[in-house]
Image (cartoon, rainbow, N blue to C red; front, side, top):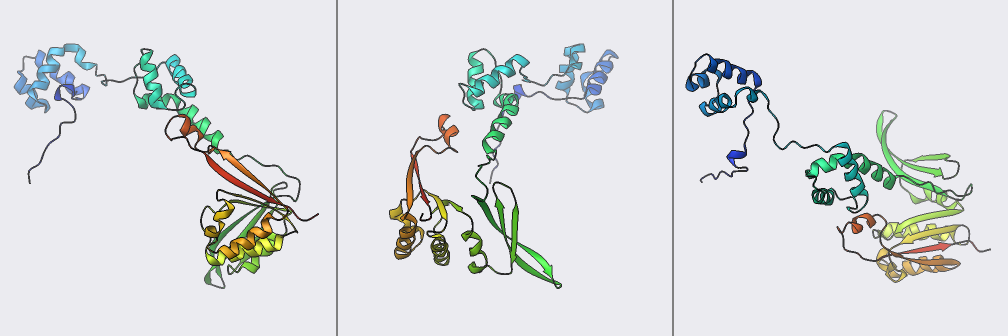
Length: 293
């Protein structure tokens, strides 16, 4: 099988880089009357390279990277202004707008100029906003597992970690199994329990039954707030059981307020502004229940 060589750039555009000490030796030997062939053999370069540096004279000592380009302070400031404004955070668009103003720069050069501003915007987008509630009204619960040595044996321990939103007080319980009865009582105690993105993934049968038990325990005893992108008519698919879904909805919708939120996704808003995604409408259903008064 033959091999095909692809020329990435014209040879005329290539700039051989020769150490400055070698260039000085070439000039000294040429001044001493040495021929190009002899000099090339002495310093270990091609004859054409010797001819080029001899013709260049003292200018050959000055080697400049081709196409090196840096924005001035004023140009960098202008790049940031365009990135914040008309370019909507797109470095490629900033490059094109700068070119219209007579400033030539690569995309990478523009990216370096706006890097600090990009970090600031990203940090603001991912920053955690603390949602303040009255004491005892909200709690965040997470699950985890870790292998530890107990009695010289490696045992998997399951952890429930609860954090009160107002006081930031921490509650941790460790279990040797994942039986629902061990941790379900913890969810029944808060005055308000928030379940976010219900139905994002379908429930397994056992998980669906556990969720029903949780709803049943809190029914008319504690407030429950759920967000979901599934309409209530689709909950049979979420819980893989139409009868179970009906039983859950029966308890949730009693004493509840249902809100339908329509609009563009907050996370994708910036990309849609830049034209990277087609515009569409997403909807989220929020169901808030409260105990009977």
